Image 1 (cartoon, rainbow, N blue to C red):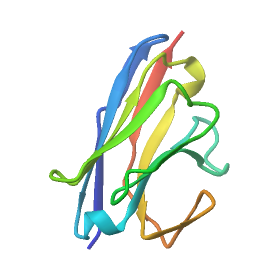
Image 2: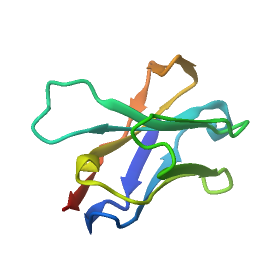
Image 3: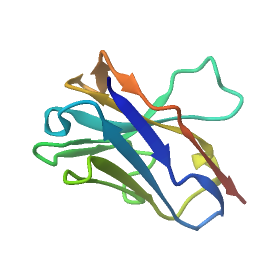
Length: 125
């Protein structure tokens, strides 16, 4: 069974930093693309926004325009863990951040994804 457990969220002032972790288990880590999506408060019906993803085997990465240059995704394959280092945080980064994993990603669409439960990030201005 695929399990993804996020941690590292919290409350931070604008301009500050946080590092999110996604600990994965139940699947062959190297076979998957792991990513981060987020859902802003007051928008439960809106689609989650893709933030970043990384190919666990090759290390290729993607960033949305809204976080490029501020966020860095990385993976530690020995620990089956993906990290999202978030710097220069803005109030608009406030959201629940979800870890997602899939073997196939088309464009930015994860096919048959598995999701974590999410971790709250709140940026105060």
